Length: 95
Image (tube, rainbow, N blue to C red; front, top):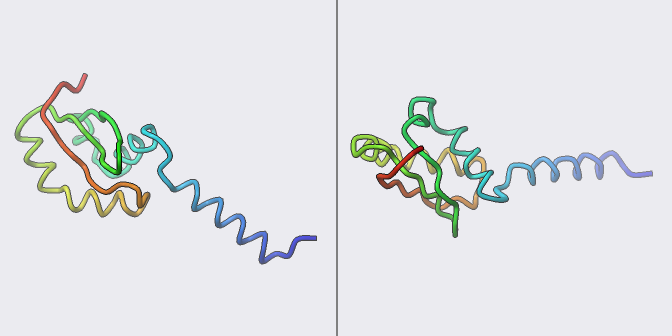
């Protein structure tokens, strides 16, 4: 019979693994967690590659605004995944 200590340890490890970033879909979901609804209306997730999330922004004013909040966003994303190292914003289509 497995000891309670071992059971709790394996459950906690399972929970930690669920919080790690696995694919682009997870990166997009993380953005939805850390950005406001208003911000989400002005961006489109492009890709996640080598620790960098690439995002299209619909205007230069939103590009500027999000770049001002970049460090705060990275800090919030870091709470969910240590794999995210940077966010890059660029002007582009968000359809």
